[in-house]
Structure formats: structure tokens, C-alpha cells
Image (cartoon, rainbow, N blue to C red; front, side, top):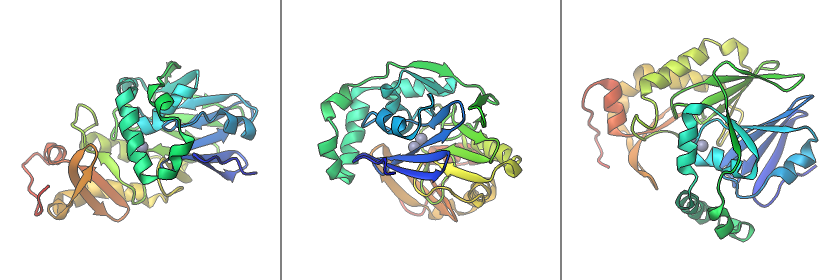
Length: 289
Ligand SMILES: [Zn+2]
Ligand SMILES: [Zn+2]
């Protein structure tokens, strides 16, 4: 069956797992249990995906959001309830504005002009979250009937970043904190995103549980990814970054200028300020921003 639309591409991974990729940008995962289905992330919300969900499953769908960035959470505007870690709720609400929707939609349409005829821009930019927010705790288990999903708080890319580990088959839904060659942003100041040391602690705690993990599904680009991506990100923070950052290249984005650090599968976007806070001394790059 083809459940895709002009905006969302749907791929079936197995009989109980679907990837709904919105605007070639973000993967939302639909994991179907015997009693309930879990939707992990809601995307930008350029269209209401309920018709897609209803075609795939007749089970009630619980929406959980890995973190409060707009590409993961604004799609909750099409839902009546969602679950998020309390530390990221404020971030999501700050992104729930006309200007955020407008600027990011303009950026997306520049990349994918063909989408313009399928999105009602004014209606989208004027939409807002009306859903009831519920909070998830670290270690909480979501019961889907024949499968159980553990919420793992992984502060780093955001303070309230959650990963979701499906216990029976060891499938880890990793949000924006683990990627294979796709960029991970640690660019905002440490009052918005956690310091590298906190990120490293999260990654090491995850590494200690690696035997429970069989597959890793990130929110962007290549999916699933190999476990070595976790090892390589830990290596990067533990010693590799401090010895080679001088050669990093400038990275220009709609949110400002930063540095791009490439190491094996790692593609880290950061600022001088973030690195200095981590290393405890001033840093200097060979190139200038
Ligand atoms: Zn993010
Ligand atoms: Zn993202």
C-alpha cells in the first residue's frame, strides 16, 4: 500500500513500524502495538497526517515529541493531546508563532518549490498549538500492549531531549541527538542547549546500555544508523574535538554563523562560545566566520 502524499512520504519498515517523512526533512515514526500506536514526533505539521494514520492503523495514536524544536513539535497543532518532557515544553511554546512558521516555511519552499501548491501558507502560519500537553519522566514506560517503550532523558541538543527505547526488539528512536553524517546542532548558548559536558554524559549513559539496543532510528536523513555513530560522537567529545577543531570550517545558517566539525559519522555544528565553555580556554580557528 502506498500511504504517501505530496508532503509526506510513508515507508513501511516492518509490520509494526512506519516512517512518515515530512517535506524530505524530518522522520516521524509510527510504532504500532496491540492496544495502542505511538507516533514519535509530529513534524512541522504542513498537513494533518490523521488521514495517513487512520489508513495505517485503527489503534488509538499517542503522540510523543522528542524535543521542542519546531520541526518535531509544531505538527502537534493537528492533535488534541501530546506528550513531551517538561524541560522542553517552554521551547516548543516559544516556537509556536507566526514568524517561526513563516520563516521556516519560506526556507523549506526555497529548497522544495514544488510543495508550495500543497500548503496553504496563511492558514499554516496562523495555526497554533491547542493540544493538551502531558509530561513524560525519565524512565517512564509507555505500554502499547504487546510492546513497551521507555522514555530516556538525553539532555544535549536540548535540555528536555527524549529518546524512546522499544524494549522488546531494542529499537531506539534517537531524535536529534544521534545522526550519521547529518548535522547535529549545539549552536545556541548554554541557556538554550545543554553544555557539551552534559551531552557527553547523556551519550555515555546510553553507551552503558548498548546491549539493549539493536537498531537506532534518528529524526533526520539516513535511517536506521549503526551503533558506531554513538561511539564516534563520544570519541569526538572525549578527545578528538579538542585536538582538531582549529581546522573546522565556517557553517552559515538562517540562525547565524557557526563552525562545522566533521569526524567519521559526526557532523557537529557549534559556536566558539560553546567550545570555550567546554574546553575552559579561548579557542581560535584557522579560518574566520
Ligand atoms: Zn532539534
Ligand atoms: Zn530536528
